[in-house]
Image (cartoon, rainbow, N blue to C red; front, side):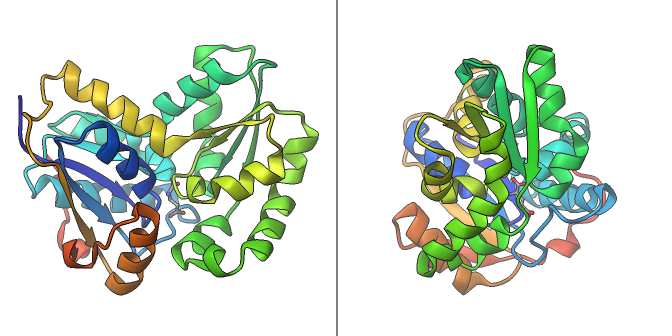
Length: 275
Ligand code: DGL
């Protein structure tokens, strides 16, 4: 048993797709969430910068004495996941393995679409993870760079029709490939799940990287004897900019007023060693 917090991070709002599920399946846990809203998006940046940001994000969470770290970010998981796993002194997971496993289990025709950021698609990370499970799987990857700013700005709330047009442009090629399963490989994308689902059609299974990672987190804690005793779970939020916008949109997504639990952090201070 361990009552320390779990640290979760993403470039912005996307990791809340994991947090929402964690609050449901791990109700006794305290969560410290960091959204790097001052430097989002990560997905259009170079591996060097993404790795530097990921180390700083992890160092900030380590300063909060967390017992485990979850990179609820497909981009960081793809580009710097193995580096963090090696460097951190606490258990760590990214989104890749849990999400790839769920997709491999869900597909019937063996044709899997992956939608994610440019950095994730360029890294080939989901292809590798899926082929490690079964080399027979056929993988069709596509980046959807406009989805992250659409979510971060809350654009989809006021303009669902334009958001759907953007989704149609990105997803039509995957529909033509007759995939029966699509990995939402950027954790921002499950926030657009109903729009993506309506474009792909109801027979296509959508695998939510945030949700799968939250489920995996439960087994990671259990295996390491780190589950919390029965207490009041809670979540505190830290962001690197734009507290008001984050609080508003995150509150709508989590269906809770979180204004009083959001604080600002100077993330550039967290340079250097992370463990
Ligand atoms: N939510 C992130 C991901 O899962 C990052 C998106 C971004 O900042 O570009 O890839």
